[in-house]
Length: 478
Image (cartoon, rainbow, N blue to C red; front, side, top):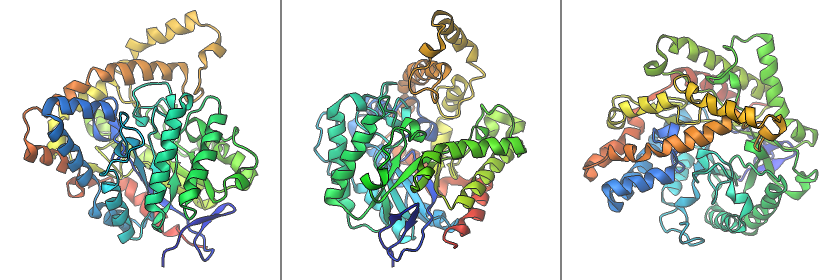
């Protein structure tokens, strides 16, 4: 019999006090769409508006509703369970529940697809974690907070904060009796330059959720993209009972910009472990419960990486396995990023033979060449364009301290130029081009495009799933 999960010291347990180790994946690109996951440029709000301009509001609404219907359904949950995994972290966008021009008014269709996904997971014995991946105004400067700016305005406008408190109250009220929900992740990857703004928000959202739902645990991300807890209060355990703390443990060895190919040397393993331990050491000193909410390599693709694809991916699977070995030793709960995409990181990915992938084949190559997506970008074709701008700043702002703007060190000077010049500026000029691919389509044609994301039309990344399957049986062993 399933029961509400709760935090007991550094462990997650069920109502009988038995430890439950949550191991699974993030359902990203669904109720929060992301450009590298589904192949569009820029932010979700931009492509939704652009598609409406091309095909009209009614057809655009139809397409995105069918996309949500087909992207995650019961066959996806059944496959996920077949790997032996037990938890899906669902990334959600606040825009599904309220409109910026009609704030704090719940949309009647807001819970439609989320209810369906939670029920499908529950049917197959899979816990879910509800992750607010976007916040009004943006809780960080990333594309995935869907606000189109590098300024995290959530932290400087009380109205944005009040709206998210209201929304979490509504979400908790709606799901207060659902035992297959492991808990709530109130904010993905906050980036609060003052640090205390995040603590104040956690105080408020904790109290708001508790007022309507005292049953579910919370998963609280560290500041600066879930990497920094030094601004958290020393009395965190007493201040926020029944809370776990989320790190995001991406290893540089799993990405194109790795300083060297991963070969499992002692030094590489030491660096990997040290990076992981640094993220959780503040929590460990206080005996708090740690959850790894995101992690995982990205993978090479033959159409872009050619003959190097297989060797590159075998090295990435080694990174994956070695991270899992560390987590197993610590009995760590984790959620790999991610479940489904168009072929860069997902456990399953959309077949190249589907209508969507055929339609956007040339456009996706162009996106890759221009490196307009932030995640795992290979900038070899355009690096020479942006280097003069970086050098200009370095020459005219020679003080290194002045170059280190928050969220440094996550964002270096080079990274900030990439965000503003490539990921925001250049990508904006490609949004209309993406939408024009749908010109003249009727509803049956639009649904065929959306059906590309159905589980039956996806391929499994066998190397990744083999590693996950091998580690899944360790879930609840003593």
